[in-house]
Image (tube, rainbow, N blue to C red; front, side, top):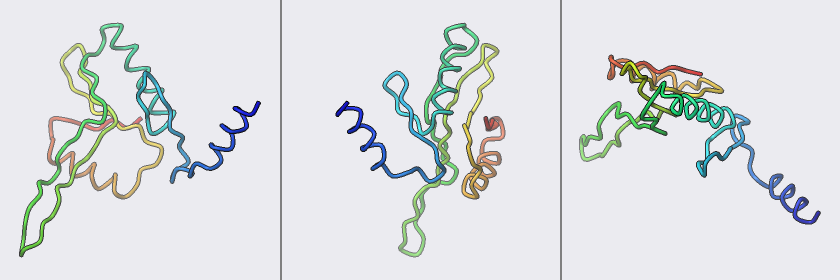
Length: 124
């Protein structure tokens, strides 16, 4: 009982996520939301069935390289998707599990679509 109370108390002390999502753990991997963890399980099932291969978690795409100008350093701009995988036909899919489409996300998606014309972000 004390263990349950401590766990409940600890949960109450945890700061609430900005958009109300709750982290979830699957296969020792911590996902930003239960929805993202659920999608990972779907991808694993498809991989086991031979429908997809090469599941990549949190793939990074450079949208703009770092640069220096007038003595100031500007960091690179990256878009980090939730998943990327290859279908059995060889097509590559970039997946973003979305709860809310923020302005920053919309801007980065637009930059991604320009920089990587052969890839498309699929929102789920």
